[in-house]
Amino acid sequence: MSKKYAIGVDYGTQSGRAVLIDLSDGAEVAEHVTAYTHRVIDEKLPVSGIKLELDWALQHPLDYIEVLEKSVPAVMQESGIDPADVIGLGIDFTACTMLPIDEAGQPLCVQDAYKDNPHSWVKLWKHHAAQDEANLINELAAQRGEKWVPRYGGKISSEWMMAKAWQILNEAPEIYETADKFVEATDWVIGQLTGNIVRNSCTAGYKGMWHKQEGYPSKAFFKALDPRLENLTETKLRGEVVPLGSKAGELQADMAARIGLAAGTAIAVGNVDAHAAVPGVGVVTPGKLVMAMGTSICHMLLGTEEKEVEGMCGVVEDGIIPGYFGYEAGQSAVGDIFEWFVEESVPAYVLEEAEAAGENVHVYLTRKANELKAGESGLLALDWWNGNRSVLVDTDLTGTILGLTLLTKPWEVYRALLEATAFGTRKIVDAFHSNGVEVNELYACGGLPQKNALLMQIYADVTNREIKIAASKQTPALGAAMFGAVAAGAAKGGFDNIVDAARKMARVREETFKPIPENVAVYEKLYAEYNLLHDYYGRGANDVMKRLKAIKEEQV
Ligand SMILES: Nc1ncnc2c1ncn2[C@@H]1O[C@H](COP(=O)(O)OP(=O)(O)O)[C@@H](O)[C@H]1O
Ligand SMILES: O=C(CO)[C@@H](O)[C@@H](O)COP(=O)(O)O
View 1 (cartoon, rainbow, N blue to C red):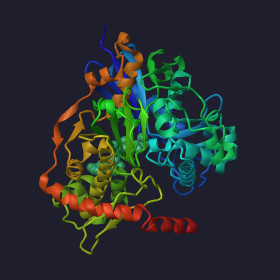
View 2 (cartoon, rainbow, N blue to C red):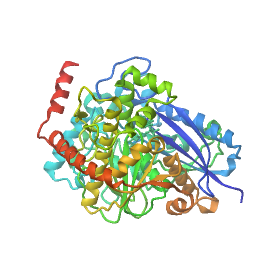
View 3 (cartoon, protein in one colour):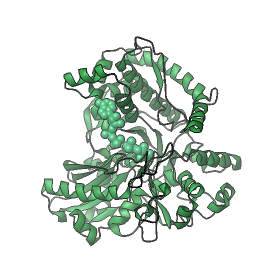
View 4 (cartoon, protein in one colour):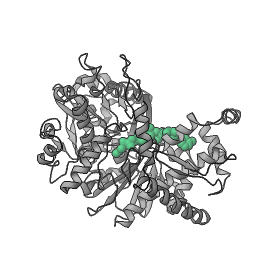
């Protein structure tokens, strides 16, 4: 049999990237990135220019198809491989990134009748404008003692399907009515490839409150929430939920021609970026926390039992690797905070010095921050620039920096921001570990570990744990390609299950980040202070962040 390959397509927040993988060793043969033409739509709608409200974040679904049409042919051309030897394709996506579609599977936002209604567009994972809905869902679920709530850390997020769907109903009932279904973008893209939309168990479980044995929350719950929602799961969310690792179907001839692969290529069911990264980094057993580190961080962990952990995003049986309970937690801004600082807060002399040194501003600030000792800046920050996902689950919280003086330097602030995100991760590690879901080792993948060694050392010091780094620069795409190879099956040169694929193809780098005892000691003290601030602002002692937001909303 000739050498076989699979393609993984990773749909991030800003761009999509196709990676062609050699199935004999997991090597990346070719890679191509396509930036989304319409980027993140958070101020106004394309064409009409209709202004969006605060906390909105939309995307254009055709940007996802453009990624397939540009990046897949590009990797095929670069590698020169015969399309017949590409036996499978898998994708991973941000989530919950959802859209309303019609009966033919067409997004409503591409239709003239609906394109000027913001609710017809794709709501990106970081669309946070459904917080009011999420608050009411949480209140009612707590009052009724709904038994699915503990599986989501006690609270569901405004990022998820239920809150987003209800926001559509509240603000644009005509879009709610017209939509045949609400689907995750990952399932929609797979549907475009195969001609048949199926829902994957990962997004259905983590973002749609679906449970393998119990299905969705009851009709009675939805009715109590809003009588118009009573039939939500049987209508707008209907459709077969298919386990991860399944084949969704085969590549249709017209799509095959558009993306340069062979018709009939096996297509895996949709997956989520962070979840695909777990086998991508080679983790198929409990005790190893995988951090997918980029714009945000998703923390992924396997366990043998279903435990309750405060503020986790969710625990889903078979949600990451079949046979285990998959746990997810997260921080909704990490790289995004560093980017905010670089783009919005550095003085001109920093830009000039960085340019003179031939460094980008992150690299320059990191080099200067690295000259500081832990704790030397006297600063402490709360990492809530995009709300708090875990453990507080509150998108109305905001960021803060404490300890500023007239002598504070930009790189001190930058380091404080790096540290704040590490404290946020420590909070999550502690929440799992103290609730019986062991975290013994950390694994990191995504863009940030490749870009910033200081950041990784700070994470090792703050968590007092060794961190292993994925060898692949494109771990979610590698994981997605593994699922593509599993969809094809061993008989076709792929694999029969994801564990076999991970064992054969995933690698970590030899170099690891080990905690440095002097730093660990200083960070213990700073973390104690972080915890005080965290609880003061985050658990109701002082709701100033929410009051400020309310005043802002009144004024905008
Ligand atoms: N040297 C750096 N140090 C820290 N953060 C960086 C650096 N360079 C870029 N970033 C941040 O990395 C993030 C992008 O991460 P990446 O993993 O590539 O993207 P995504 O999350 O979209 O997949 C951006 O938010 C950017 O601010
Ligand atoms: O929420 C999830 C996964 O559950 C992510 O898709 C979301 O945080 C976006 O991740 P990125 O920062 O774009 O990698």
